[in-house]
Length: 476
Image (cartoon, rainbow, N blue to C red; front, top):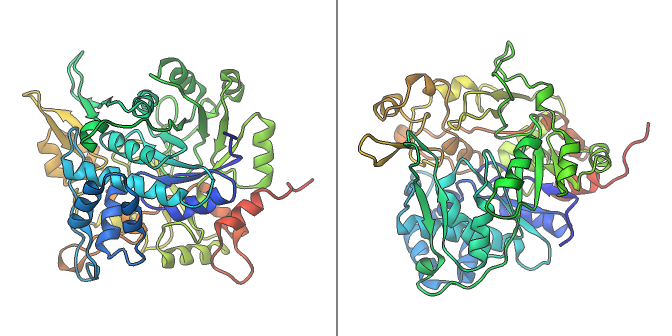
């Protein structure tokens, strides 16, 4: 398989959707769908009526008809739920998710990859977060059922994922050790997914996708090569200007006067060490120009990964009116990005786009009533009796503390699950007509978004991004 020059990043919840990945793939590059909360996104698309029929079209292609029928029966509302009604809830992930949630996670990931790949020979990847461990096994299986070509994973140390891909490729069950707060020395908590049990018949072998780990340092990359339970095929080296979750700075955490983490010389990746590993790598974080692409290639990279440049294009999943507003403001340079050290329940720094007082501002989101009803960023913890509980630092403070969490860990935390879902037009309707506020994440390259906008236009396509990147670099 030829390596892509450009990887379209797997962004947010439903931002890197099948339409965006399909467009990039058809242009000869690696289109990537985001797996984060994809079961929720899929269920809500069905509840909204699936008016274009694409979700049901994908379910028609799902190899196990009984599973597809269960999902349609559980979530599809032919006329749509209506704007005055809330979305029906989905079960929250646990170390042993119920059959209904497993059905939903497998079919959702299958559908997204299937639709991205349908009808053309291009390559498609899927992006997962190591921090969302309890959804990984069924999500990966669903993507592999659809023939996904690449799996990309960051926000943690995904040593066990290559082995999972190997097991599924052989039609075997896979296990994943779940990180549990308070686990005793030598104690393991395992999540298991058996394709044969899921299908009710012996599982067929599947194509093994290439695995790219998203890392920020050569030390982590070397550890993954040496200690993973299967083959690592390459790396995406992500700098601190990239959107979404950033790796914490190496060493003690220090903040600027504005409260952002300070990154220093120790956080600059050693590209010579990456080259010595002999595996392809791509550079990410403010690389969206022909000049940066040329520099990456000259440094030995196979190419670059881009998120922000694609996040606001026509094909992305961000709500259209929100995209138009952001694009129209891009010409004035009025956007600012805050690397929030507290926002994410994962504890990783998380970039938040600041637009105005009505969108993603600290005051608006702090005023939100704390609710944890999606649960993808919950942390498993060991109870005194040895059983598992689940808590999230963004849930109601009293609930978190009652589960043994520290009050200090709740300060500044935001519900990314609900906020990011709202960004793609799936905001939950709460009591008294309150609507979930959005959280928009983007990289620092948002400052140069206007370069993609045609004259007198407030929108642009994925194709225009690719065309710009493949144009000749400017000469001095």
